[in-house]
Amino acid sequence: MGIVFIAAGLAYGLLAPAPPVLAESPDELPPNQRLIRLDEIHEHNRTADTYWVFRGDKVYDITDWVPNHPGGEVILRAAGGSLEPYWNIFTIHQKQEVYDVLEHITATLQCSGNRRSHMTQASRPTVGLQWGVGAIGTATWTGVRLRDVLADAGLDLQDPDEDIKHLKFVGAEAYGASIPIDKAIDRHGDVLLAFSMNGQPLPRDHGFPLRVLVPGHVAARSVKWLSKIVISDEESTSQWQRRDYKCFGPNVRASHPDWDSAPAIQETPVQSAITSVRRVQADKLLDSALARVYGLEEDSVVLEGYAFAGGGRHIVRVDISPDRGHTWLQAQLQDDGAKMGASGSPDDHRAWAWRQWRAAVPATQVSGKFCVKATDDSYNVQPDTFEPTYNFRGNLANAWHRVPVIRDDKPS
Image (tube, rainbow, N blue to C red; front, side, top):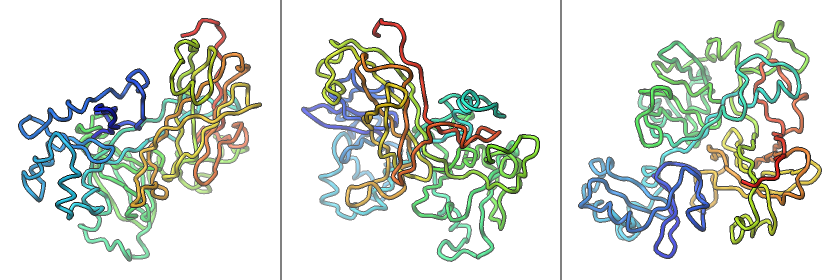
């Protein structure tokens, strides 16, 4: 599947899932996207080995879907072109369940220990792998909805027994975790039993042949190498549910935690990070989108990064400071891959993927450290320091991310 923007006979898009951008030239596309020409789409017609179609702003490889199409090979009439003319005739397609057939879920998984090293450096030592900003990733996942499997197994989704409160997952290597039953059966919760990642069978490291995908929740609940699902009146009794992924107050020491006093982490808080800082000469910025948005006419520093909020909450703003937090500007946000409602606006709380962002600052305005903070659609915002949220496990470290300024005078 891919995103396509059509203009002047060209389509800027992607063949590997990623947040879409409207680029003005191939040079402005992120590394995981490339320029697609409409004639390339046309080549994947009914006489080709693989079939592509596009609808609205999305491109689909329907090769594997053709044998399962209720209308048979009639769908090949649209191969290499747009679905719209045919769906305007065969109006039975114009309903949400048909649209959902085309959709996969693009979702971000974030370890609860992401940025743990920053909490250690800025506050006190923490227990666990000292992650930087990289314990997070985004992919497009394909699978079956967990709620459909549960319904097929006989669970009443409308009125489950009051004793049913949790769903436990067990991996082939004995890892275990659980989620509340409400998340599992929510028709808007999008919990999947995933067998494909980015259009390919799950890699072994990501849970082949089957894993749970619990979007909006900490990655520890998306159990890999799934071997068993248990409907239960209590949460998983595993080490990783009861005595690991939890947060305690700043005063609680690692040697004396009351594990039962803290709930297991499920949804994650708002988060952001800077992943790239580079000097750019003024002549390289001329006529670029960044130069126009920020009014740049001199050598500048370009920053890029990600922002993410758990629970399906949308990132609505990312603030950048070039001077330790004294002054701020807003970054340009890319699409968050949220599911869209019939009105064309994002559905409430279904933003499962991060938002990538870019910003630029004149080099003369940079001093001290760069800071970034994000705000979600519930107006949750990252705290400025780690001390108030310190916990000995270093979980959910989400204070402002700070990086040093570029010290040399040589632009990249």
